[in-house]
Length: 247
Image (cartoon, rainbow, N blue to C red; front, side, top):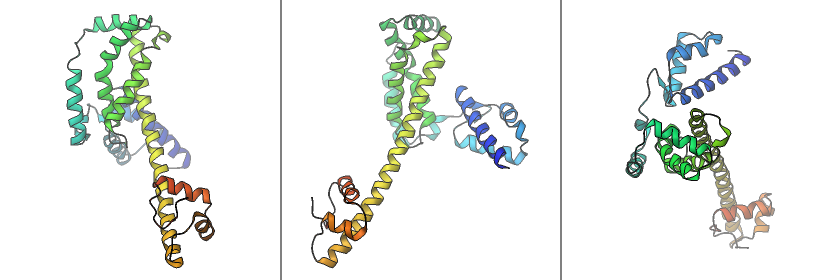
């Protein structure tokens, strides 16, 4: 593939995943082939696409069992959470529409009832994002927060049928944003840990040479690192590097 084709391929693959999510994380063979029609992929290349989709919990032609992707710990949490949801009274589609319309009109009681209606969907959506670096419990929490906010914003939609799409999108967006933030935090932590290891190693070497604890200033002069950078490393590890005098 040329550069332009690779860009188009990546964009198409992302669009296919998005379409699958909107369809309950399922997409047909015909939809995949139509999406990649312009790229004229070979049979082998299409198989690679299907393998990629399956690895990302997308069912080809039929929904996947998302429970199979969960750890034992996550399954235990889900079982307990489901027990709480089972206490909620089931409602008919007609009742759901009536509650939605009232929530759209700004009725607080209806908005609270609508939250209860969509809590089971938050749980199911969380399974789509499990295994991407965030705890399932946290994903459900983020989804519930988005849902709680969303039911108060339904005044901007004209029809009850549009409300569900808006709420589902808000829940998904919240979970995706949380995963991105978690990944960024993990990367910052990884870099901070690298800095701590570097400081600890240099401090030990200098301390052995001087036969005593070293100061931040001495370590800065020896390593070329700024005192601020060294202090940040010390704070990150709770001042646990014994070879450095605590400032």
